[in-house]
Length: 609
Image 1 (spheres, one colour):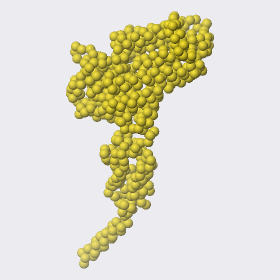
Image 2 (spheres, helix red, strand yellow; image 1 turned 180 degrees about the horizontal axis):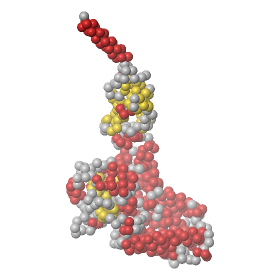
Image 3 (tube, rainbow, N blue to C red; image 1 turned 30 degrees about the vertical axis):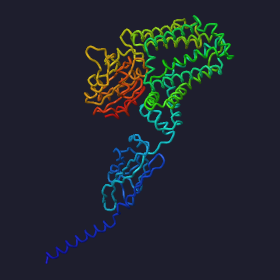
Image 4 (cartoon, rainbow, N blue to C red; image 1 turned 135 degrees about the vertical axis):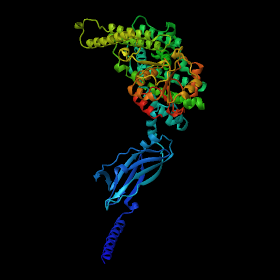
């Protein structure tokens, strides 16, 4: 009897537990009702929502937003504020998250109209009985949208890959291309490459004004002639380079040509100091005057010639848009579109110069003694341009150029009256004397640097502060460890003059067990010097470069091997930086053209594996 009672009691307990479980199961909300998930594209964002039924919550650590096709990566999204339940951060009621389409595009880097899949992963639990649901994944298909006109402009203005510029020229409308290249020109006008043109143009305006006041109309006309001649020159050079495959800029970097330009600037400087006056013969002036009633006629030819020369010698080292246009012309033969793009870009570069000319009447000093002082200031600038030209000639040793800069700054300081009795100077003259003192200090610093063996204008005391300098195929690259860099040297060769062929480069790339960086530069390239002085020595960049093999190739001599190398990798001019991954595969979409700031270069390096 006891056994029967015990059996009945156990049956009663089991039945009660079973009924309780059935009741809980019956009360549990079905997954499709507990979680209502949606994702809708709304303009430039994807609006996602997870609406949770009453008593349902989703754990923050189990909630993920991913792209699973055509590539797989997790998105970093801005989440709403979660609250704590039993030590776990959870969401209730509704989870609304906006995902900018631009964030997805940055990582996908695929053309428009390419399909991709967004996946939302989550796991929820019911507060009724503490039951948790199985993990869920909801997938939504989207297509990469066509960017708007201005979105495309904004995205391309920071483009450092000439191959992408070529793609734009091939696929976009003519109006879009011309507007884009105008923006490119305006951006190039803000770089140091365009700055030397300002004193050249200003000196022309001052010299043409003579003893009269330079009017705004006359200044604008002079600058317009200068800019148009520069733009036409750039266009012609680009067309010839594209159609014939000839690097005209390299030809104009011939040592004799550069030396001639330097002597021309020296002659202009001496003229501006008042020792003599450069002008056409009287008979020529008479003919020009008779041919035109305009008082400006005498200066048009000289202004146009200076604009023509400036396009060759003062213009920027090759930039992505210029390289892209030239490569586009060479590949398609479309000289009309490529030439128009280069012309519009040159006009954009020249717009600040037009403003300089238009402001001549307002900002230039009135006739009088000040005009003499202004001419002398421009004379000093012309001397600086002459040294700048000589620095591009490989025949002149770096120490000689450094000595010239040192003498120029010290001489300028003396000219500014740095040793005059300060008690006799008043007002603005004291400030002028202070600037002279700063020039003297810098000139002396350069002289001390020269004696120590340094040739860096930006870091004159590098021999005292950073004695470890590694020379890599013609460039100084400070580093803390040389074993990670591939030095293009051998025991009996000057690294600056080693002949690099396509076969040799590919052989060295194949021999590397790391990704490879190849830097193409030349002595006459200002942006190349910027890379060597600012970007490559950056501590963070140097650290990241330890996982690369670094090769620098100097193409100053423009030999047949140099030309073949640039042609093989679809490059134009310098600086150009190309990359190979660890499997020795060339990455054309990762190539860089022109100067790259350290932060951008570091970010670019991290994207290569």
